[in-house]
Length: 460
Image (cartoon, rainbow, N blue to C red; front, side, top):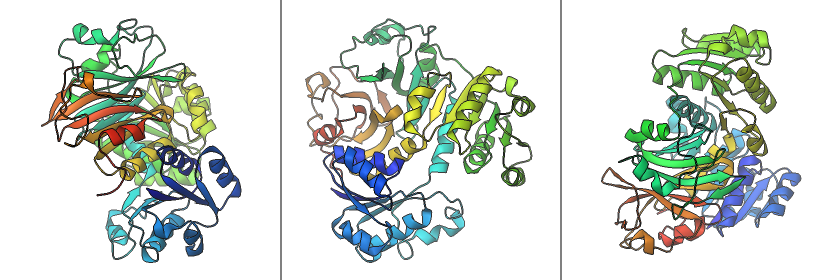
């Protein structure tokens, strides 16, 4: 597939890496020659320097022969115009744009993005997706990562194995005996910055492991308990940051978690005033610095279930989170934009890290792999993907016991949904046409798995 990416920042860089590793023909455009140099040094992609929305620059990137345009610059208007130009002049079949401004996303103006006006096929809203990611962590505070698939019937959970985890040292093949009828399957273990794919069930979990599992939604509480996590849903919440993400989180919590008590701390006076005006009266807004212990105590940090740091400054988020933990916050969720910070932060006592570029990448890849790939959840540090795939009759996996299937060593089937029934896969399990297959695929093996499942990275 031939793909043109507009924007070589964190998201564009990451998308270029994923797509080039899967043997796509990728061209990336950016005004910064330094950013273009960085991405072309790392990946087998072509770089074009210039404003991504200018027709001559898009022509230089050969967008007229591209299957897809992905516009992820930091400026909404450039992303929107790039899609318009790609459609009007070059007839690019598929256009994806990242849009931050809530004004553009107002449902009252939805017609703006219709085929007759500004034809953008898929809009990615980072702030909305981030707020939903935070909300999922609040609902399951014992998890550092949470996703859902198959219409929320399947949960993807990342948990840390602490010294209190009751299944430490047990081979994962024994989980079915230890927890009778538990519909759960372990799909990946992160240990010492490496990904272990538990194919034969002999892997033993160790203290400090970060474990990903899939389970049926109704079995979630029991699955979390098997790892020693029985934390209740967060109700008392303190948020650092009253901007777009903070207010979206507050509104989402107010509409989802009953009897919630929320306080927002915002350092900018005008932003704090706007938050106070626009949020429900039950939510308290404090104008102050989240790094000030006096302000944190005024927000009731010692008694909160969860402290959420979602300011625009990574350093403020990290330091305020550490202070909140020190002053008694039971659970801490921290937004970190710089992916390189993520491995460090998780060692400092932060329970869950939200990385905006990673979430945006997952959303974009879901649309890139449109064939029979129905959903994608990128795991921490983008070391692999959990994929929901519809099994085709032509796939070599269909009609064959899984023990006989020649899955790449970096892939494992975690669950099968058949007519709304959750099936924990065993060696003798046979995948049928139309099944929804939940797989974990380590980075570097995705192209192999898609070919095996007869999934072409294209749009039907």
